[in-house]
Length: 315
Image (cartoon, rainbow, N blue to C red; front, side, top):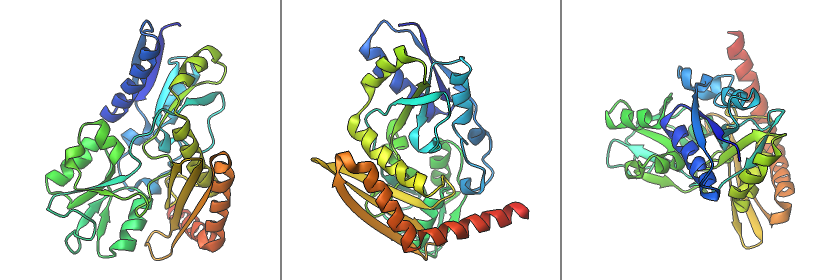
């Protein structure tokens, strides 16, 4: 196999993730020379406001993808939840390695070990509309404030008392060795994570069949099935970071159970549904679940969010 180059975002977490993929590939064949190149993305440069207010399609991924498309790199490594549901022409996700924790974590500057235990009117940092909606549903007194930047920066803002708490993905904290900062792990069945949270995508050029054969060996079938089902729901909602959608799927034996929620931004209209099917029917199960959410009021929520976003753009 020829020497390979991995394109990665420049954040510490992204580089840890890319190095993990490099290690997996080198374990298959120790003689492969694999290097990592850093790529700056729009999402890394723009930290001004809530993420859902941005034109967030490909916000953290497009520049990394371009490095593979134009031949500067052979592989792109992404947090799969950042990838748009419509994959870029000329590229394919050749593997989804074994998934990390799917749950969200609460980080606090006090002894609070749950959302319920946070002080009245506490400031909670997050730029995720999904997290904001679920927080407001549980505690409408909490003040959600924009929180962007790398995980270390977000954790430090809590430690320095600039905010009372933050919601961050467990997977990122675990990968960076910061699990000891977690005040509480939010049960994913109750505080639903983003579709594909905790999963990595290993992306290559569609025509690179030699590399596809190698990369496919680090694919984890159960992880692939669950993230594909979760992203199928996201596709049906025609949204990304701008949709307050949470999805959690788990495999037990030959069955998959999918929980999904959609809510308005204020958490007042919260719709949650669950479905179970055989694993080989996971995608059709996800599509049926998405239709149930839409029929139960999800369509109206999406229209309200879209209209509100258009109004902000006009202003």
